[in-house]
Length: 281
Length: 288
Image 1 (cartoon, each protein chain N blue to C red):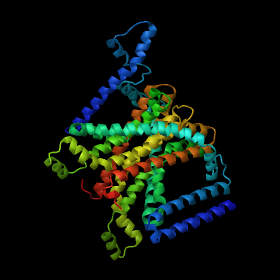
Image 2 (tube, chains in turn red, cyan):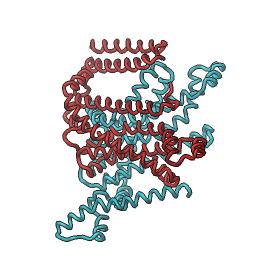
Image 3 (tube, rainbow over the protein chains, first blue to last red):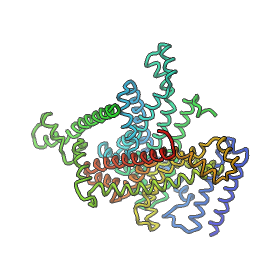
Image 4 (cartoon, each protein chain N blue to C red):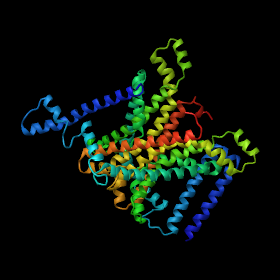
């Protein structure tokens, strides 16, 4: 019971601290913007720990953060092996192939308004479909190893990326394109110097969506067959053995990897589209 | 017609490519069979044999269409083999998750717009929550809820679907509730409007276009969540479960038919949500 009370007090104290910071000039500073969500995260972890221990919830149902941290620390090699299989071999190659081919397709159909008018509604529709359902089929085609995972990722990221890139290539306005024409720029020059840079905010929007889809695809594909390692494999087998601390450890790794991938894309975005209003602070 | 022609052309192209891919992928099996029988088949003999295999690697469109037709209309819709039956189970899960996602998204957006500390604390985590691959949580949510005594499979599915669909609603509603400009807010202040009145009469109506725009994304996300929730769990009902069964028993036709049934369901949902959106816009006097 003491655990519960202590946790609640800590939670209240941290929340009050956040309310206090939010009302100060510090909240506008960069440090404040990072500090408040951080404190909130810590508060949630403390509350979680306190609730599990205080209410005597079985660790089998919901392991407390400390147990999960211990599990992560004790099984680093396994976690790394799983992450390497799922993320480095499955998600990232699929992400690169899928996004790359989508951008190339968008450029290829760029000169044909007919194809664009035909492909865009279909692309928009397919982007909303549960492509994840292709996973069992692709596993059947490409086998259990990383190739099938990469294929699922390609199928998942292709259409959102295509739709965004096509929209981006139309983003430069008439006046700018006319200016390029008066300079006697060829199609290729206009594409490289005006339209591709103008499309970058859209392309990065697509890349951000694709970065989360890539991890989902790679993990789901492993539910349908995989070598005896990989994050999806580990999660599905450990759930069966009620090793929920290991499952949570994998989830923590997945969350970290997902955020890191998203953060990396945002970082490159800031570097590439420094001119865009949304990037100027 | 002007808009339909390009779409139809592209669709036709897809069907043609699909047939060619079917021939190519299924030919291996035909050649294998011929080799085992000690005969050789010419290309012209091989092609027809790729069109009607029992377990094709890639079933050609007409086979998928036939299986889909059989699944949708071939039997009573209460039969366990009917795709309408499984589609309805998935639809139910999608709607529960969608509803839950809307409620959570709107409530969070209200709190975030009203309290600065909520904005600063919760918003970054809401964004991070979407980078966590939810499917990693799916098997666990299901074990958890069964251990808590919830034998109903709809609950975990709805939670997963809501987890995916609350986010678009949240982001759009935050934008929408902040859409009224300072001038409008000041005007309401000069009327002596309370905070609740400002919310009901200015912020809420101003957010509606944003809200409806997010619903299309949210309903698609909710369907994906429901199907993912059905996939890895040994569920026996729903389109995701059908795909799983097709995969485990090596019946590609079942997989493809349920995949297309899911696509049809997604299309219907998006059309219905779009219709509701147009209705609401008309009632609120938004042109177009």
